[in-house]
Image (cartoon, rainbow, N blue to C red; front, side, top):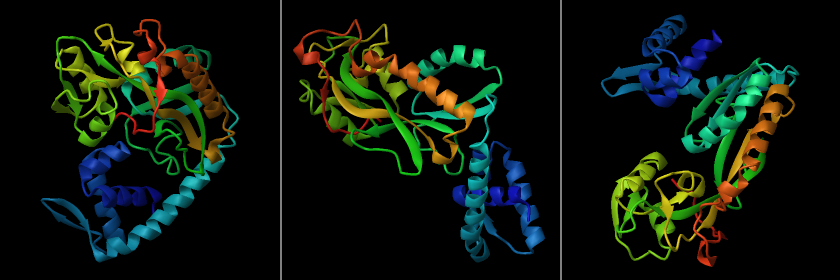
Length: 304
């Protein structure tokens, strides 16, 4: 049995859609459909039932999943162990980041690094989900974790910088919040501020939309200081209530600890973000002064 056929089978089993499986594997949906059909023909068994709602595992398909996952785990372990011994400063580095703002900062600082090491090729993705580093969905991940939480034991991790939030506005005549779609997270952030009694308006699904809503004068919001303090259009509220809600971690699989290019990339990212710690702590030069704007620690969830 071809290992690639197993990969296609597992991707389709997990997503139930040839388009979603194709996106996960970076191939066309027709390739997924064709490879799965070829696998069924070779095995002489139907693995999926097809319908307008997508692909559903048959009994035989369900029986195949745990065995296929064991093969997947063994292949991933072999790849990690071999990659971990690579001492060359060249080759691809797959990097995932929690949001586009952190990615922008990292890219600015990685430019001289990749110029120095021309053989290293970055493959960069921004996504809020936790990529499975055991299956090598990424080699290195920048993850936001709530204060006090650490990465799983099978990962090597380094806490880089705190994630501090504060209250921002573009128009101080507006006296309402613009809200995150995750209303629980929004209330936990807003309730600890001097403006907790102000009404909430709207529902915005991501950090980028929230920043634009506040910049458009639609209301105030708690934003990470690395977002709000870098914006030319935003200013902190008189009582900005900065607080440390989470930490940014750099994580990688333990099997990849000694890979030369990954080790060098991790070191460069760590140094780059460490040099920006004032921005992440909310102590940038143009922040509003006063004791009410000194960052404070508080156990709360990270910004959605």
